[in-house]
Length: 100
Image 1 (spheres, rainbow, N blue to C red):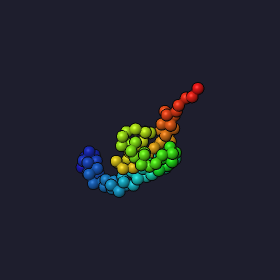
Image 2 (cartoon, rainbow, N blue to C red; image 1 turned 90 degrees about the horizontal axis):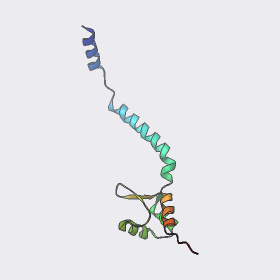
Image 3 (tube, rainbow, N blue to C red; image 1 turned 120 degrees about the horizontal axis):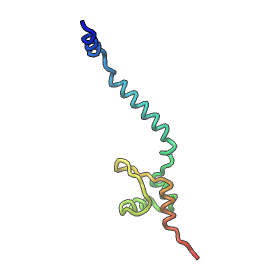
Image 4 (cartoon, one colour; image 1 turned 45 degrees about the vertical axis):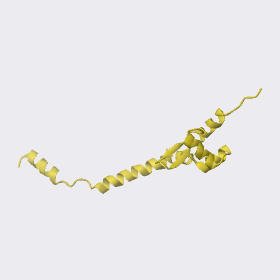
């Protein structure tokens, strides 16, 4: 058998990595990314927390989102809503009135 024929046989009979190996590697990467992002993700506020910061009701924030007014927000999967603290501060500052 020639060297190239042996190589083809070796390649064809070698067992490919099982999908479970790839899955485990992907899960490990995801876990590492989530670990790195954890402090960032914890800094986001949910609607009740944002409402408390702005001294408004949850329903007011919901109405503002529907009308596309109010502070910027992040909607995840069409359901969960998060607010960046900086966006809340920006919103408050945009309503600042200077007095003489």
